[in-house]
Length: 255
Image (cartoon, rainbow, N blue to C red; front, side, top):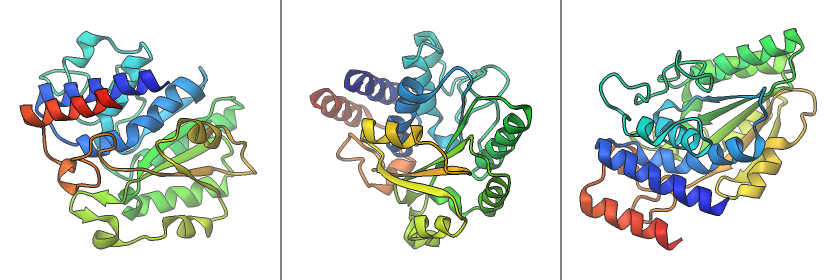
């Protein structure tokens, strides 16, 4: 798995550099979780929803490592007429059932799908990855009430808690700290885990439900794996210049 993660991280950096686009920090904080889900957890009848749509690059690269996208597909990232747009767009892959470009939409969609599966008696599970700042959106709290009310045991909400967002830290912009305590009041199962520890995440994702939706809060580092990007808010936006790209690749190669 370590080799797969290194390959995915390098390919993510290459894809963003060649396309001259940013959002690298939030992609790197979420990449490990997506890789664990795709390579260690998801069954054929499970569905993954990326609610934090600006991490689309990490999703595309993860799909590439799983054989669901080709090298030629990745070369179209952000290009004119591409399927691999800046935020996931539906209609071309079963792995992307919804558009999740606007934060606060993915979890409500996932909750509706989980209820649909439950009513149909389907065995599949729904995994939804949100950002932590996304919980500043009221729609997520409404969806949580809905999911808890319907006891959606087939739903697992994963929160990428890197504590940074577009205009600063989550604490400075609109504090929800400690987020886990706020969620506990809804009576859902909550697990806190290192979002860069493969085995810890696998165990958390696979844990059985105690009667309703589960929530896994990942302690992550924005820009994980590239020292000059780690915990630096500007890498929510910036693309890499050639020197930065070479330095980032060298660090990932050395890991």
